[in-house]
Image (cartoon, rainbow, N blue to C red; front, top):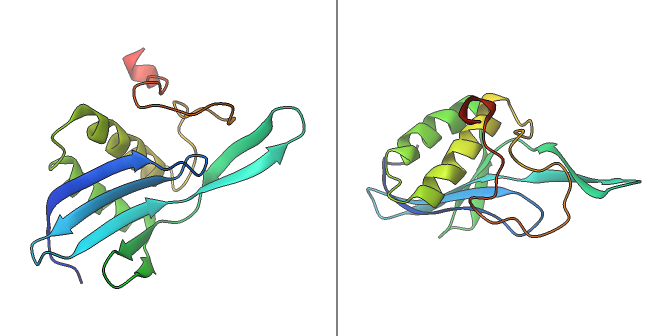
Length: 131
């Protein structure tokens, strides 16, 4: 069991095609990353396609180890991390990660299906409720 998160270090979309990572520091100064790896498939007409996300893992940054988590456990961790987010881009990534966890790995509609260019924060499609 890890100690409570006390600081969000970074939350970002990784440059591997769309995985997501939330790095944080705990009360005992250990650092972890909650990681959702994107599953990419080749589409005959559109090239690389983001299909879904593999089950979450928690990476211990110091030990270099990782542990598989349930989607439910990831949701709990993300709700704690959202409270620590101090900037809009980190909050946006954590919200997207929360959507992925709630759907148990499905690609949210605001994350483009096909890879074609580098994505930047703020370019995600708004949720239907925000449109």
